[in-house]
Image (cartoon, one colour):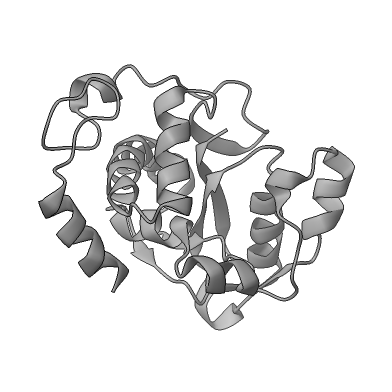
Length: 209
């Protein structure tokens, strides 16, 4: 239903580049090249863009809170290009092939309120592996990480909050994907769940930091 409504809205209100205003797309290729890359990302996490970038922040906000799913396609395409480079090296050096893409699951309350998981939308737009939204689940409700400023509290908030299905992740190469990583606590908690369930290797990726 959300996708149908969005298509109708896009027809009635054509898309324009969020940066330069060019018609026909949310973000043109020229403006994509000017997005600010992530700096000082948490250790072990591949983060693509700086969340302080005006266009990146707008895209994530509209995707999460305005239901503008087309941003997931934009971010998914960009992430695919970057990951193809990373995976080419990992495949040669570490045998990281045929990855299972696992979007970080939302808390049930937020999923009910929003109606969709933005990380899952981005994961489906990737072209580097297969997606599973059942491989990792939340085992308990947590506070919104974006509302917690203290790093120690962030770590405690998501500690043990996820569980992975060994039938899906054991022996697999996993890409855990989230839209935004601040301290990286959520991604690491999801990674730890995959490792505990027997994953062969886990790569942590976020669109922004």
